[in-house]
Length: 428
Image (cartoon, rainbow, N blue to C red; front, side, top):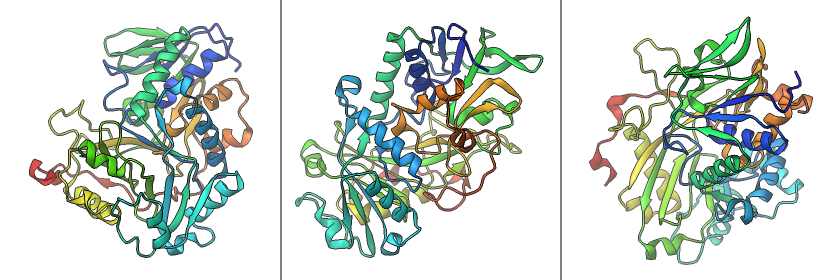
């Protein structure tokens, strides 16, 4: 279906996929693009794409993502477009010494970065790893660790970058409405004709794009996306430093350890150090017999929606001590369960619904979409215009055959136990 550029397009969700798609469509000459988001303020405070920071790396075992990430990094560097959203601190990609052997995620990532001409430094042992940090920083021993430092990467202020792109969409005459909670995809004779919000408002459209992130499976169960979409909560914690303390760590790289999933950023402009564990995460079912995992955030539970399990809090401290032992002794500023929409193979879902080509699904960021904010909407626009490479159509299709698992994470999701959430004194 080739869509005339004056037809109405409605996008559900003003996050990474939705806003990037809107921008790319408008840049291609589409004249009636509307973005709807449930949140009354944008960027949405509980969206995965709105955060202090996100890693920007090209270190993937999949050549496609490595190439696309390098294209995104080129855009992030353009300060006229992004201001100071992006910080090229470098990314230390670590694992165990055995992870540098052929066939592992770290090894394949290294090979892809080298093949694409990235500026990298091999970190063959603990002494070399410690040498990449400023001399005033006390680090862990990094025993049995190895990896490499990719100088061409770092982190982006996620909330700032998304806000910049929202403003760009508006400047291109795109329409963005906040506080519009879409509860139904409207169909006539099996064809999508628009959406309906919880207040009864209907937006008609020739094409609807569902880009609602981790809320997608639970908000639209009738789309039957459970096979390729699973909402998982990822554990994040922050430490507040003084200006002088932050200056000690200011020039550190992002540290990403694929053997444990732990990653930690240098201090941001507010002198906050954020850390997290890239893991299978937690599922949450808000009904005793529920079958669809649903995000549990500060919006749905203002009192406890940001809390993480005690076990995860302990794991974060243990892993932080291995990198920055002095920081591990400091009290935590706070935590967050950041909700991803995961696919089994870690590939995104960007495709037409198998039963309706007027409905496009653009989601399943699987914890690694934000870095592609400048370019990910191009893939969706290419799909809409039937220009997407056939291999990518299959790679991202809604009903694809899942042939592999996501090797960047280990384990299986655990059901969130609300009785295991930490108490305020556990932050000290």
